[in-house]
Each structure stands twice: as structure tokens, then as C-alpha cells.
Amino acid sequence: MGTDWQPLHAELACWAEAGRIADFWLRDDDAIEPTAALDRLLAVCARHAIAVTLAVIPAAARRSLAERLQATDKVTVAVHGWAHENHAPANEKKEELGPHRPEQVVLQELAEAKVMIDRLFGDRALPVLVPPWNRIDKTLLPALGRLGFAAVSVYGRARPAPIRVVNTHIDPIDWHGGRGCRDIGALIGELTTELRWRREAGSNEPIGMLTHHLVHDEPVWDFLDGLLEAAATNPACRWLSARELI
Image 1 (tube, helix red, strand yellow):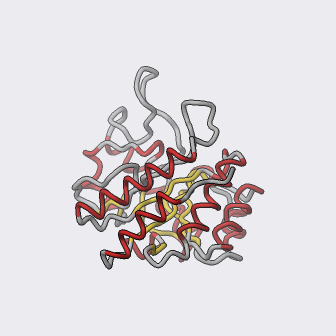
Image 2 (cartoon, rainbow, N blue to C red):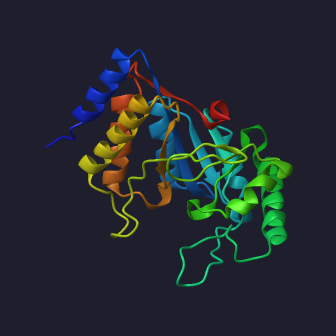
């Protein structure tokens, strides 16, 4: 049985009737080097003419990744923390940019991370910080501008902050249930709910899709391809790059 995208189409029809366009963007985390999975992600995006922002781990990033991206269009790179290393105690949620170390130590790592990403990826590098595990101590936010960051991207609806927030909202991976794909119907329902909330609240917050190409199973690939097929050509949708969003 095929995937039922009708709830998405019905909600987008409401957007069209209201004369509005829903903005989407795609962020993919944890890239460090070329892989077959990365090639597949880039191919899917190219097939649908969709831009993607790779959140690259600076401490592990290899020049071969920068060389691989030279042959691609519509790919930008964000700073994915420093080393994607957990510094929280075992009884707390994982966090690299949390309150568990001196603030100046964390900020120095982020300053070095941005320099490394800028140097390695050149014009593809964006001044966007993607905290590992989508968590960051809010006391760090006021200092990010001094480090050259223009925006931060985590997960969930954006809250007021002293820096631009460009978040993701839909993650197809079941991280607590074997890392396979979550129920497709539930994902479409969540996406439809996010769209309906924006339409009814008058919000223009872009909807961010979050992927992790290194751990995708076939159903996740199918969901991503199906979503792009269903939404990329819909006149009520507009897929933007992170560069456009900041």
C-alpha cells in the first residue's frame, strides 16, 4: 500500500486558498567525509532541485568532503558544534554546548570550529551554529554574534533569542526505538499539524526537515523522497536554502 500524502495535500490546499506559501528547508547532520549515503542524499536533493545544509562536525571534517561538495549545487555547510562530544553526566541528556564546562572553554571551541569550517568550505560555509543533539546552554547565545555566527539551529518551534533562530521541526528517525523510520502516517500528521498551526497563527516560521544520512534505513529514504516529490512542486510550498533564511 502506498503512502497517503492526502492530509499534506489538503492542508497545502488551504494555504493556497489563503494566498499563502509555506517555506521549507532541509538540514542534514553529522557529515564528516564522503560516503555512499551522502551521495544518495545529494542525489535525492538534486533530483528534486532542493537545497540542503550539511551540519558538519569541525573536529572530524576531512578535506575530501570539501572536495566532494565542489561538484554539487545548492549545498551549504553549517558548524555542528566542535567534536560532537558529550560533556553531560550520565543521568542527563547529552550535551556538548551545555553548562558543564567553563563558558570560555566552550566559546573558544566554537570560535575555532567556525574558523575551520570557513577555511575548509569557503563560500559554502554559513555562519550558522547547529548544536549537537540540538541543545545549547542559553547563556551562550548572546556571545555567538561576537564569534561571527548569524544564526543558531536546533529543534522545535523557535523561541525569542538574542540571535536569529532557524530551527528544524520534523525528524523521521526513531532514535529511541531502534533508529529506524518512525510511522510514516504519524510523520505526515506532524508535518500537517505544523503547517496548520502556522496558517492559523499567522506564523511565517519556515518548517525545517531534519535528516541524518549516515543512519537512514530504506523507509527513511522513501519518506524523504516521497515528501520532496509531494511538496517540491506544490505551488503552496517554497523550499529555501539556509543562506536565504539568514
